[in-house]
Length: 306
Image (tube, rainbow, N blue to C red; front, side, top):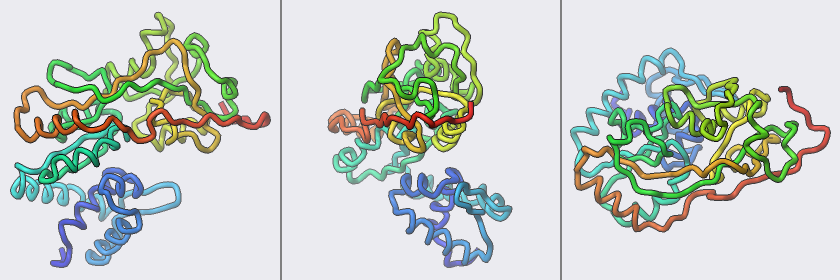
């Protein structure tokens, strides 16, 4: 490896490799997407090989990228453990909600380095379960809840996401009883009780749910919605992420709100964790995009495949 390759290059490479999305990786690193792309190009130039295959719709690791990833991850993990384990806190995210609290928390604890990482929806603990994060903004219910402590962050109403040509797309609101026979997008089975909660199984009163696809990230959820694979619920504060390309969000009656919490492992008694929790408790409850969603009227002729 060239001596001109810096740890920053590797950290940026890992973020893109894990997210396979330059926009999300830039958000996690708190840098602009052009700056991130420039750093990746510099790394590729130093190594003399391409690390990613890029297209307008997708990002994939090349053979060289796949070979580099585990070595880069091990090197960064070793470096992080050696350098500043007492002043760095890893924050897990399974939703963009909660990011609105971070500026206030950062201001309250400026000496603590906050490292934010987004986790797929197959891990409802956003890294806590496998000790990949120290604190996490997650939805209830958590698996094995006795293993965690948490504080309440927000209650988020659930909205229904449907494509513009759906029979319910022009409605101002719907009832859960109208949705029982619809095809549904579901979290992976590994997410456990949270999967059932997002499918509103308790409110279905024994009516079997028809799952047509499992979803683990925003992009694939949007793609499944656009292609008419199924419908799903979304927290009101996240609806604006999806309401494009004809997708609409509709208020739903008969389902309870989702509960967003800041959680940490019950056996983690480090003062750094408690300091972060206290700062979060004092932070203004101002969440990104909270309770803002679009419900445009689709054209009458709009029909998407079912």
